[in-house]
Image 1 (tube, helix red, strand yellow):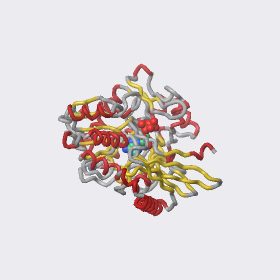
Image 2: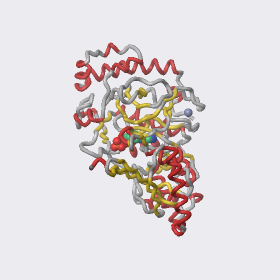
Image 3: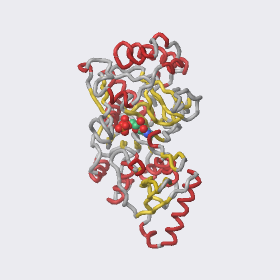
Image 4: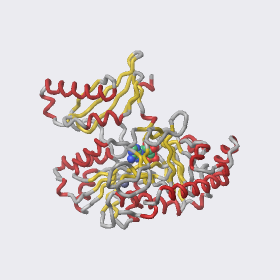
Amino acid sequence: MFFQKEQETMPRRALEALQLQRLKVVVAYCYDNVKFYRDKFDAIRLKPSHIRSLADVKLLPVTTKDDFRDRYPYGLLAVPVDKIVRLHASSGTTGKPVVVGYTKNDLEIWSDVVARFLVAAGADHRDIAQISFGYGLFTGALGLHMGFEKIGATVVPVSSGNTERQIMLMKDLRVTSLISTPSYGLYIGETMQNMGVKRSELALKRGFFGAEASTKEMHDELKRIFGIVTNDNYGLTEIIGPGVAGECSAQDGMHIAEDHFLAEIVDRETFEPLPEGETGELLLTTITKEGMPVLRYRTKDLTCITKEVCKCGRTSARMRKIIGRTDDMLIIRGVNVFPSQIEAVLLAIPEAGSSYEIVVGRQGFMDTIEVKVEITEGNLLLDYGLLERLRNRIRAKLKSALQLDVSVRLVEPMSLKRFEGKAKRVTDLRAKN
Ligand code: ADP
Ligand code: ZN
């Protein structure tokens, strides 16, 4: 099923012609309406008319999160604030948040692109959607909310937290789609088991688990817990929120809404374009946004893209699951490690629970890394021999996956922190030294 079939199945040549036409318009629009872009163009003597092909996008300067922060709150708006009908902001753990503004038209496009991936995953007007993302400035909740309303589904805007009540509502309202971060999905699943609610008592069919990195193994675990189909979808505040890309029912990568967002994969240091299929940093350019258009935004997210037509018939490029953010990459004794690599190993071991924590430190000149992982069966704690064998097995698997010796600490079930939004599983103590 398609939400906007024409746009979603447009032949690639037509799609690329449309992208080029829109790119030229947005570049001129940025130059004319946003001082920040005009100054940057002038500094390198770039004129909007220099953009003649899609490949010319590489002539444009990149935009970073700091550019948003430095011009907080309204510096990157291309329209007067009175044309803005909604503001959102990213959480911004340190310093000022990133504030973004949407015109009426931007909200239409936003809800369209969310509706597209919902329908691509099989949702329709009969769905009852429980939005268990935290409502507020975070784009996740309202983005999914508008997308579900657009397809005529029934929205339950429950927000995050109060997990037992979530389960009661999910059961009583016959909810068919659950929307949360993968970490909160797991927590909801565990709480459900602790309450003695069986998955057969729910009407749940689908879970849309996005907004943070999650491995295929994590989705497999969520599928197992709820007995549902899970969907991964990607987006970010600076670009629009959720809806930049999402999986279809073929589950072979996330379709990028390319008629609205131009995606590039570049070398993360040189920004040189990488050939199709190679992994690098994703840069995104909005080609239809009015309120706050963004040119070549450095997402810091690492992935790769394929442009092959998907089994579902959609012609848009698909991005693989995000490996991680460059910011989250740990360098341990010279070895690059992404938390997602550790997650994939742990979740493939049935005796290891799905909650884990990574603590990085330093002893003398030596980096240390410890992975705390819950065991699934509490009575394993009574058998030291079994426990030791499990610990060694996890350690050996981590070593072969990471080429790094990691110390493993097994902890009791339900003893690690749970998350109602995006998880924070890594503590790096080295920064303080
Ligand atoms: P914040 O930066 O405060 O977390 P956002 O909600 O805008 O605010 O976060 C966007 C980021 O979340 C993306 O750049 C990406 O790193 C991550 N993200 C969002 N969706 C996914 C996804 N499906 N898979 C992996 N990472 C994701
Ligand atoms: Zn597809």
